[in-house]
Amino acid sequence: MPTAKAQVILGIDPGLADTGFGVIEKRGSIVTVLDYGSITTKANTPLPDRLVELSKNLEKIIGRYKPDVIA
Image (tube, rainbow, N blue to C red; front, side):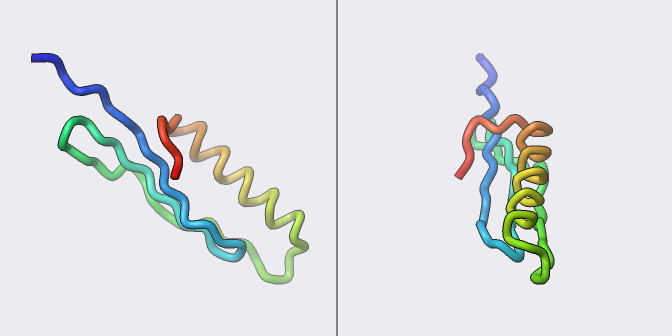
């Protein structure tokens, strides 16, 4: 019987001050949590800098887990 291909899914809960994320792996009917957390930015930081910080952190997560789907 062939093994089901794993699908890695990154979920993002957007926010400027606090962006949540979760990474799961789904293989057939089995779902495994790979990582989850929050990316926070400080309120007194200029908007462009906050966006760069969010982008860099999300790029690291995407690079590490190489998700098949992002939602």
